[in-house]
Image 1 (spheres, rainbow, N blue to C red):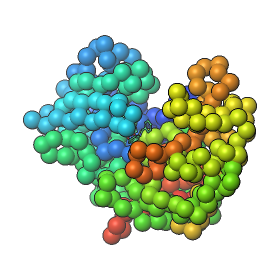
Image 2: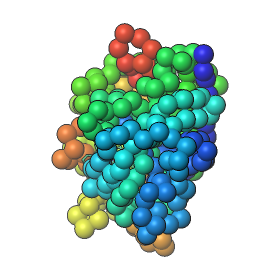
Image 3: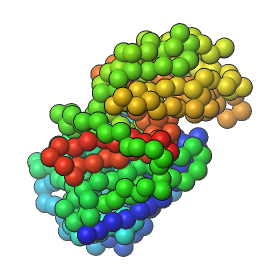
Length: 327
Ligand SMILES: O=C(CNCc1ccccc1)Nc1scc(-c2ccccc2)c1C(=O)NCc1ccccc1
């Protein structure tokens, strides 16, 4: 009965959180991503011009999955592709003896430039794993039956190291009760329904909720356009800047707290989390932590929301469920 815990280290402005993972005999820093289902990493097979500065997986310790390849494109059009090996993976003491490792033979510049990240560890459902001709399981699905309880938890923090646990819920990480909601796995995400929103200007259209996913791999909180518009209508100096592709606000602003009703419980995102980051170093204009989910098809509860709660990703019952508790 395995259990384990691993640190989640915030990158600049909490843009992403990285965790140490042992793959074969390399230790790499991976971005744990509940919004995708591929475990991929830079490798000795990646072109040097693309992998400079990154930790590399050396497939010599693994067994190649003949004829298997992978190719993934994310919503921001960043992309990676390569071939597949089976190798040992250890996360916080939890061991998968034969995990599909997707070794990159090509990555887009966004990944090359993010030198702190050596790849991603997908924690969405294996149904959206991109390996062809036969999709493989995520790390969580691979070790699930060996865990004390088929759950993992997410405790991200603003500007400080948080943690992921596997196989147990850490009662010291939250206060009050855990509120559970059902998960719809049809799209391969940890997808749930939010009941409603409040806070900010004209109370951000309280009452109308919608379909959302819990996504550690996305930095911000993407909400229905009407909710985002309503929220910023109460923030002095905030506006939708189409050149920046979203809402911006003065870095000197203290935006109001934002409340989300889920499972009949209200969770609050402190306003300071919504003054996200300067457009570029030294700018006095900041990008908003709440943005419109237009064109995505659902809302994305990314790190701006997740760092305000303790989140439980529970696949231990007859159907998966998500739990949220106040940190
Ligand atoms: O793709 C994910 C989870 N992985 C995030 C990630 C991590 C590292 C590098 C790149 C991406 N989540 C989801 S579910 C649905 C979308 C989406 C977003 C915008 C348009 C269409 C689909 C995304 C996604 O791409 N998230 C990351 C992101 C990047 C830029 C803007 C918004 C969201």
